[in-house]
Length: 331
Image (cartoon, rainbow, N blue to C red; front, side):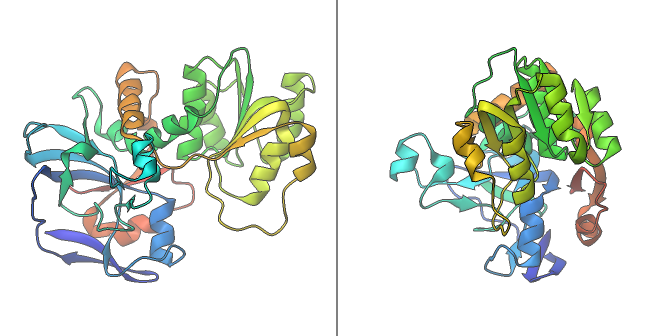
């Protein structure tokens, strides 16, 4: 079978590999689509170290070809790509996504950019037939956003700002609208992404240079009750802190690994802010993502903008910056 493998920093190949062995309590899943995310690009570049060669990828849905004991053959399934031991203190405390012995498919173990994967049935969630392939392609990302929002309280009427209108930012925006936040503001340099945010229910949108004035205008100078940082840069986290009002919450969703200029630390103290930084998701978060999509309260489908066959993985990784969700079509 074919698989997308990284053999060194910046080196990617589509190669033939053996089909996986299906162990007890596992199912063999035929991969239909697999999404590319920032973690994948950092693994490919070498910014995230992995043991190579490594089959890449962790976002996918597919069809059960050889069932285990729980999910019937032919079921469409989403994979929870985290791995966990089940017996460490965090697993026992309902935090298996933070397992001390765990990891991520495509990083710590071979991933899903391939034709078939053998997966523990506990990692699979059934996708209803009513959910389109485009929407199913984004369910894994939506699950992480759902998990992030379990960490914040939403008490309408509120004003929320979402900084960064990429895939995760637009999903966060939809979730906030679905949860009843009265005023959601979307911030992006991209006019097309701002237009999409307005389609999804944003009350107002603006560029980063307009964010402070727009937030002040809509909150009468009080600042936002909630700011979601969905870019992953120190400068946008600093902006999130500045846009937040007194006693507000900053949801630092974007992953920031380094910084040089510092944050407005005094504002953290002066405004008595709460900053929360979520990681990954639990299986029930993915289940909630499926339910929200099936009900129509969240629509991930428009976020899929580029679709490539598995054999064109190199072109997929080089998709333009204007792309939202880039997806590999495996079957």
